[in-house]
Image (tube, rainbow, N blue to C red):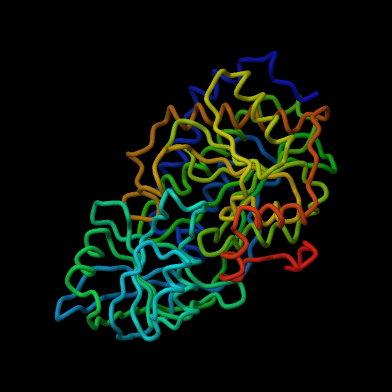
Length: 448
């Protein structure tokens, strides 16, 4: 029986461990960990070795091919001024001109009410509080494509002269349809004030070679048919250290591996750790793993992404009642705040499993702020994180994983059709269909 409630030695050891924080420092010092880059490979190797050092067995990297993207220069020329911007990953190269149209938040209704054919469209990175769901960057991009825009400008809603990044493109067409750039809140305000309705030129220079990524993985516990999958992603956008997103999550799962290695004999179920590559360009690594794995043997997925910046642990349970119950047991046991939500979160590495009805958590940190904050900007740096938060959360995630690995813990899956219905009810299906991420047919069967 996987029950750690009678033991406290592992808690003290985890709270004084530096294994996770040391790995986090190593990851941010790599520099560019963009999907398919040498830096991403170095990061995968660091994680593989850290899992082996923790005592896991069969530490390895399983490679896969992907569409690469390498940044060049980007610019916006407006009335003779050159405004600073950065290309969004998987934007195509090109130079296009058109009148600048500021569509504010870039809601679906904003696009429906505007005639933007041939224009350069600018939208904000946030969604108003009175809108029931978050409108993702890629959804706004493909509304712009659908309505005939010549280029897409993504404006950060967070002040600080920080242009945001984030990929475009789809599974079927990895390189996007129109040039796309990110601008800071301040540059966006200046463009809107001085150049709204006036001609601007957007230029993107990039290379799109074929590339190789991979997933770093290792195992602990008995060699059972069933397994608990504990995951994160190693890659980060090339403009930043990727400390929060997602060096923090990767450091956390390595700390969990160290903790569980010390109590390995108590585990009822195999625990497999996977640090994915190429998450930031479309959940590619986790998609590869979800197709390769025996999904029926996965008791649960615990995916950790962008957690340490907020002290309160946030657990999205996707409507799996047994996962919600486990989260409540965790909060009660440690008398520690744990935030839960049953809404569908289709934007991290749990999702390629959840769409099939595999029970899965999205584990993050609750900040109380709108949007990503420092994430997806060059300000995603190490000094904004604290070792205390990493250690506390590693303790909580370790206890959660041990609970899920207990043979007496019941964890029921869901019919994929119910996941599809939840997405429809939460008004998320429309956007997923726009960007080509809808995986279901009319009967709720997964078809990709």
